[in-house]
Image (cartoon, rainbow, N blue to C red; front, side, top):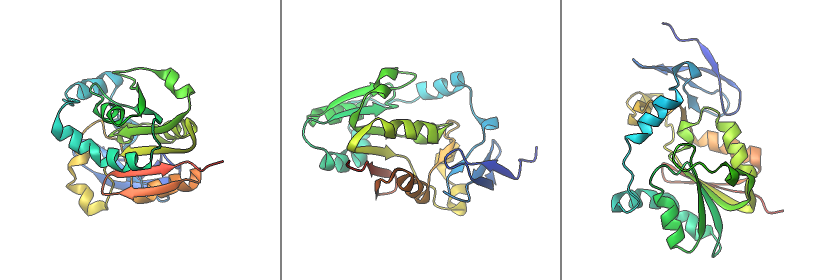
Length: 217
């Protein structure tokens, strides 16, 4: 089946022309924010998505996994006042990042729709919110990210970890797109668009870490 020529960006709602297709699905790149997304026709069901997540093995005590998460934890911890309160959103079955932040003296709650459901956490206000390897799974990224942003205290930090798109040639051989639960691929411009929308301070760290700070009132 020939994929449609255009889709609608689920982040900024601008037009997203066809970008690339492989044997499994089609991808579209936004003209405005340069986020690449997979349209809903190729999304997994909730049961299929959960089955994929159940295959992941993320042990909170695994040193290699902790080193991976330290790419976000280390720069975030430099910014946080002592005894801050935070939310680890989409923490998965083994919330290692929350453990690392607690060990550093912070209070951390969890919310994950499959493994640690805690929707009441989204009605509270937090000094920081983390989402590691989460935003690439979101079918409605703007809705979810706006909701998380609204949960931050003035001056609070949103810390994200997700690999960023680096152009069509790199995308074609990119291992990150082979995960069927990955449906949104952010670029530097995508995060700049969010920072403008939120009037936020933006820090791009390495290839896959983003910190956004909410303005003080």
